[in-house]
Image 1 (cartoon, rainbow, N blue to C red):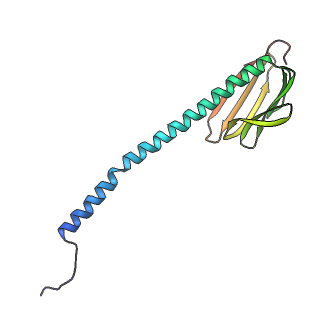
Image 2 (cartoon, rainbow, N blue to C red):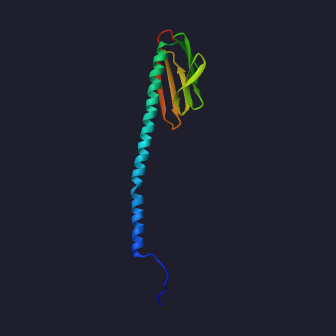
Length: 143
């Protein structure tokens, strides 16, 4: 006896398989796009770090009267008081205690260190646990 129950036919099974193949063919494209986004974000962080290094190196080289704490550095440059400090998840710069300019973002922790041989060392750890270290040389009498 044959019953009249509905079931998948061969054509429906092939159609379902075709849809599955089309959807799975996009998975490598999605991963490739994700990797491209990560590379762009990494380039932005490196660019931000290089800008920070160039600006800070120039100002520190011209600066005098350095006061260094763990999370801040204060000095005079061209008769203005410059302050670099860690604030929340960024490093900011202020001139004569007016306003602030974000220099580095998405940082977890930072530390300034003054050495006896006239160097300032800055260590920063970003939120993705990448640690970068910068070394700045100060002119004689600057520290």
